[in-house]
Length: 200
Image (cartoon, rainbow, N blue to C red; front, side, top):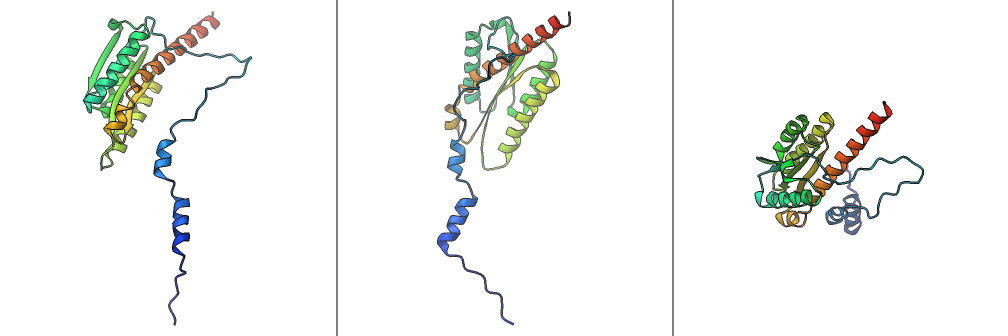
């Protein structure tokens, strides 16, 4: 009985098939955001917050791990809070060991109801072990849970990057997280005010 003969695929065809199946890593990493602004049609009620500090209390939870980067994220966030009109005595900075501890601290400070929002800052740099995925994933899901369980906006200002050089290029994330947190806090204030007025 003769052995089955494997069908030989020409080398060029095999390479083309592999290329079609596996996306180019470089292309996937470069595609970050789609351009353009959100367009809302006219004649609809719109609730939209603004990143206005006003008299809001803000907790800034920041990881000490990768401190050279997180210190600069903190500087970026504090500068943005100042620009937004948040007074220094209304800001509480909460250092924690690293990104993994951010959700617990964010949850604790949100539960006090003394803060209109929480800004979480950290930096996770990929290494050669799965540690990166675990820490980055748990930080993201934990911070979202803190916001959902308390109803207090928690902004994600955690850098998840391949290298320190990438982190250096993304330090504006601190200011961006502040704007997000303040906008959501303002939105929730408007919603509560509107609901209270409607209930009278």
